[in-house]
Image 1: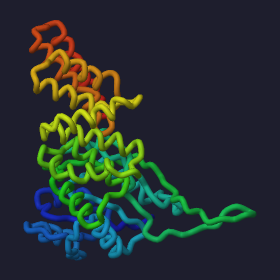
Image 2: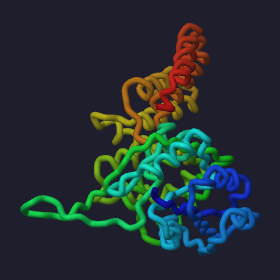
Image 3: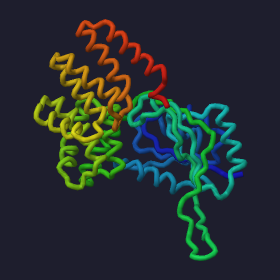
Image 4: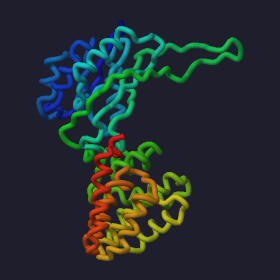
Length: 344
């Protein structure tokens, strides 16, 4: 049977930490808690479960904190847990079975992460596989009888374990602060973080978050290195920013660049709908909301090609005193939500 180190990074998690650690009792052979600056009772609660509690000065870098936590692990595998996660009894039993039966050649075990859309900041789907269990020391193997080479790709196993994500609030503000500090420190974001930043803005961002992001995305738009996917993303962000700033020229420039492509973005069509709605031109607004709902695909947030434009269409037809169309789009809006398209 394998042994497991649970590695966690925490800060001010007194409301949920005990719940998480209770669900891991009997599964963890050691628990590593790395605290990045708690001001509440987080460390005192952690001390009821482990004596392996370490302080780590927060440098606006989650990877640095994760790497530090991994460096303290000593067991065969490392399980990465967040304080707002819970394993119910059925999945605790599945985890125990996994410990007993896991083949030694497995490098990474993926588990189903459920309830992602609770206080969602970056996800369009409620359940997905995530890598959660990592072999601490990996053995490299040579393969092929001739022209031999070392196997570099990890062996990944998709388990049937479901982890329940049960947050009590949103971490979007924290994330936006880290994005901005990273831009300030490094001058740019990696392609992955660029997309994550944009997605988090469109899923969880407030007006002030778009305003703070505006200079960076303007800079990205002006670079020749911007590829097609990055360009589509920046047009969505700038369309929102310019609309909020009431900069008509900038707004139209971003929107026209986007819809001139053969594949316009649902978010941009929605922003055009919002623009005409604000002007009181409800008939024109319906054209763009319809395009968002039926003629385009989303770049960042699935709702902009679904329930968001549908309810706006109902509101516009209410203003236009077209009761039949209003009721039709309200019914489509309710059906979209019940159908679970946001939770596929």
